[in-house]
Length: 268
Image (cartoon, rainbow, N blue to C red; front, side, top):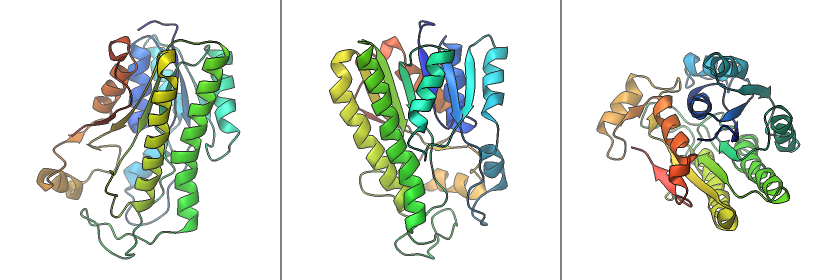
């Protein structure tokens, strides 16, 4: 992959986002590591390991990339602020050059939720009900910010008459809903639709846009109950490491995937 490419990866201080940033950097892409530290809601359902990962510094990811010979900067910014997309693109352009790869990985997830509050999900978590606060936070990051990031990407690409680009989003749930994670699943469905529209509207400019539906991925959430669920559920076959998902993102952002667009790629 040419070193001229520049990527923004959101939610890149840990997990799949960090793995994607490091994978792209290893392929010669300059990367802006976008992140926001913060603990999720305090409850017994949230493992402390995941809380620590969410609190990690994206500067550490950028430092690892630089130590390995790559080029990266880290910016902490809140995607709930509608001014953040322009700020991130400005920072990337100033430090690295025009952005032609966007990975919408960040999530505003704070808790699972259910229309039957108090039920226990397949991995033993008791889910609260749907609330306006959870809706605003989840849709604000996963759907609205994802759309605004694509819009910023598109407007700058068109302004410079760009002819190459890659957009990758991360999704979960499915077309038949996401029990015990109903708001998260709905927000990801919105991001899927935005991304599919981008694939059609930007395709003749050499831009591909795809979504990845990862398998259960060990970002700090996986415990024995989750592994047992993966081993017995009819739709989940593996527990992945973030790097395994990162490699698929890297491939989609490369030249070999130039005709792969408008897809929701399911990893199992």
